[in-house]
Amino acid sequence: MTAIAVIDYGMGNLRSVSKALEHVAPAANIVVTADADAIRAAGRVVFPGVGALRDCMAELRRLRLDRVIREVAASGKPLLGICLGMQALLDWSEENNGTEALGIIPGQVLHFSAAQIDRHSGEPLKVPHMGWNQVHHTGAHPLWRDIPQEERFYFVHSYYVRPAHAADAAGMTHYGLDFASALAKGNVFAVQFHPEKSQRAGLTLLRNFAAWDGCL
Image (tube, rainbow, N blue to C red):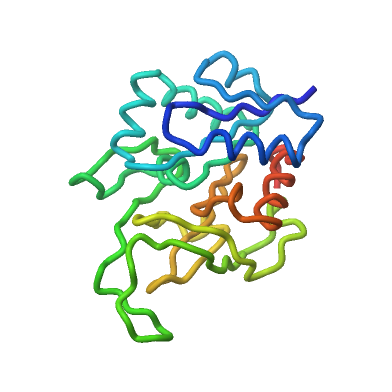
């Protein structure tokens, strides 16, 4: 039986993510855990998160999970980052006057400017970016299977990622500016939106992840 480990460091929608995974992969063993050995033993790993990156990194280091996540990323097994879990994969965030992250995918995490204007209404954009928005696939990927181009997903975030290499962006979204809403690098896939809250499209992405072998 395939095990999917959902990393529990106290900062994620763990119940929603695990229940969504149970729904799309009923034959899998879904394990919500902070145990390093259980995470290493799992066939696939989900790294969710909500809140501040500084607190996220502090908890990961306290639990010694930062090194485990790097090991998983280097191992070739499928790793899915969600929301804050996506941002933590990059090098650095400007949050809290600068926060060092995991450095798995080169790039930075930046704050939406209050000066950004909605291109349709001309009004200042609200921060955080909250609600449904479209995702444009920048190329084919196993996790986009059966998900239409420009499909809508549910977002809640004040910071966005800017990968150092454009090729690492798997999906783009517009909110005052175009930002990478999905990243793909080898066996690592990460999304800024919440698939567990994104109804059919989100469940399809999680189903694809549960079947993914980490190869392109």
